Image (tube, rainbow, N blue to C red):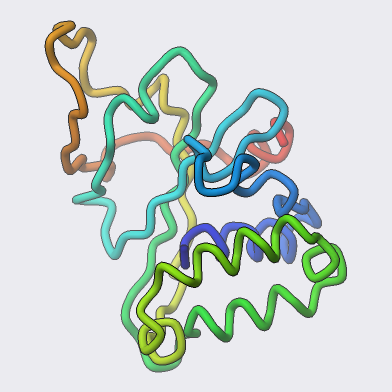
Amino acid sequence: MFGELSLIYYFYTNFKINLVPYWHTSGSYSKYDFSVNGTNIEVKTSNSLKEVQLKHFQIFNDDQNFLAISLVENNNSGVSLKELEEKLKKIDEVSSDFNFIINLETEKARLDKSDFTNKKLKLLGIKIYDCKKINPFNEIPENITNMEYRMDLLNCESIDNEIIKSIL
């Protein structure tokens, strides 16, 4: 959830793009973290591009998907999820979005209360990838399902913020 909320905050503060209405559009049943005009963004939070945990069939399919990696480090000078929530709620477009508040409370209920308040992460950056360009497998046999793995994205080309802004 830290990565998702960081993406919302990052796009709003840097580009004035409000992703809140597109976050978990079907509540906890959402396949993707964000769905915007036929484009989906799945967010992963990681401390390295070297090993990012992926669910293959979620992001590598016929949909128009992007993978956003929120690069973080454990750091006492960072922010907790509670502090990030407070920053977001200071933005009128965020605090007035009823569906966002409902989704946020649903996600918070799944978290360890101590981690929500005490675990501090520092956002080092956000990298976004076009899933069609980073798919590591040309073909998967039909009898393979629910495939999950760690992927090294260090040598994969991320897309420029201007491109993702134009899509959103």
